[in-house]
Length: 208
Ligand SMILES: O=C(O)CCC(=O)C(=O)O
Ligand SMILES: [Mn+2]
Image 1 (cartoon, rainbow, N blue to C red):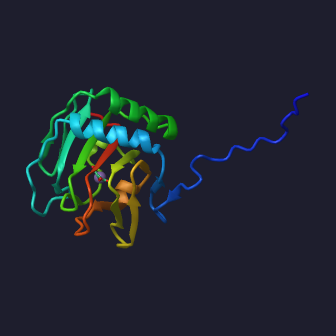
Image 2 (image 1 turned 135 degrees about the vertical axis):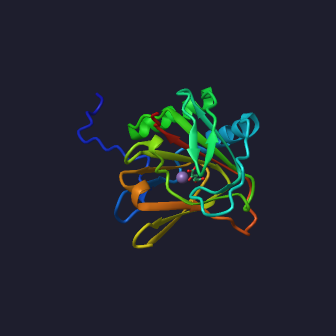
Image 3 (image 1 turned 90 degrees about the vertical axis):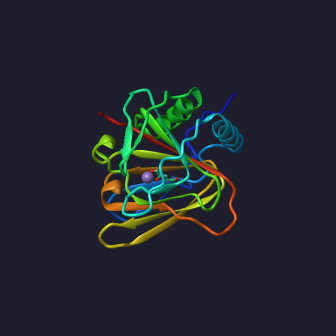
């Protein structure tokens, strides 16, 4: 006779989840959210199939200066504007929709758009900014997927200047929510350490 299981223990798949922010918002890192094969396949498909655009290089004085390639996907038709740049909407692809659905299944948050960034090497970067444009709404949940080379992610509190750092590894998921965009800025700094290419996807729920 089969023994009845009286205690149910469900070991969390994400027991290594880590809250990065000490206060004023949340940024939870799941270092190995996607399995290696899935992450590798997604990286290759995105690298090859994405119509990469290089937004006009902005030198300084702007909050989201970017030296890299990126593309904005959404079926809402809403363009994304930051630092005086307007990113035209491209239709979501099946792969991006699938990754977005995996993020929704895990977080419960809905997404209708994704900004895809390619960092070709250590010279590609995104300078200090917060994703606080009105289009993202108040206290947005922004889910960031990292594929490919590991890059360091810095967060800095706008008032206390407290710094938090984390390595965003291949297949990791970072969920930023609450006051995180209001109280903190973040960046991917340039690095002289030789690094391979990295693709980052930030899923968002935008409204016109
Ligand atoms: O590449 C990353 O991890 C961050 C990208 C980012 O902050 C953004 O696209 O707004
Ligand atoms: Mn950002």
